[in-house]
Image (cartoon, rainbow, N blue to C red):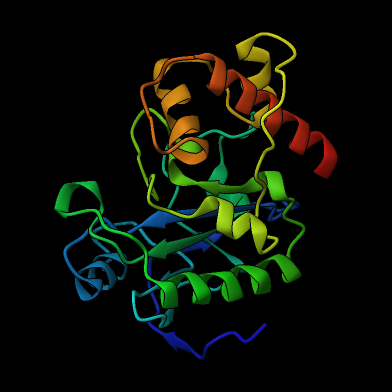
Length: 226
């Protein structure tokens, strides 16, 4: 592991974490803005009231915005495994990418390499299980798409960050399987968020047989890594 030097770009947008709350989630975002500098300006603007702990640029540069010991304001209204105060128990990493609104594109190889190194370092400092390495769309599927279908979740899992399923026969109803994966409902948006991560080639929000098999595979992977 070779973490690049972190460029400090302090944001004022943070507060104290709740007492006795573990840091047990890692949440990945894209910036969804036209440039890295515009994203950094917004994340450091007191009026915006948003931030993250880190931002990884397309060239691989890593910016440190908020100390990991503090609560950054990146998740918004969100839920995972019954928890709703996601900011209080997570590390948030932004990836510079225009997003779906401004010309969504592939994440670069230097960016993904730096993210992997940074994620490994974060995971070495906090008890974050593979099932809790998440995208913003996982925890807020009704309003967020990031980091989106171009993000290489499988490649990250191959590096030991997060998990990836083997398709398997699904046991149980869809709501139970989605709950075991971590989602709190079984709406069309939730199914689409699951597909965006695990079946990015077709995102239609339908619980077809392939999606059900993948649900079973993710649930099985969660059990193995619990």
